[in-house]
Image (cartoon, rainbow, N blue to C red; front, top):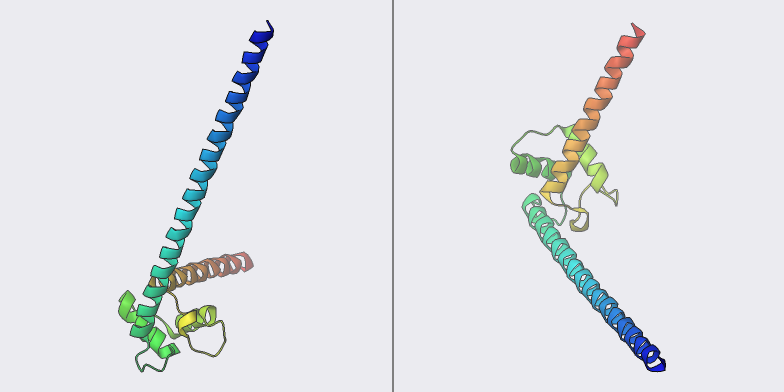
Length: 141
């Protein structure tokens, strides 16, 4: 019976080992996936930066290293094939011009998609405010 107990113990130890190995394997797998995700993120960031730089160079018509309000308006109208009001472009400029110098430098520039999303968000917000004002007016009547 002593022998029996001994073999159970061995079996238990082997079981623990198998479990440790499995945990190690999962940890390695997770680390590998994290590394892959990080490198995908880095690739994506690099692609976005390249796309932003390409757009920046296209928008910066006079090549002075920054995109002015009028260059931003012209560039976006050309890219999005639609007219954009001065007011709207000014709002965009305020959002992305983090240095506050009234123009966009390369490090402040984003992809055309980002600009488009922001324009759509501004339009939605304007509609929402207009609808609220309309309801407020009805309430006052």
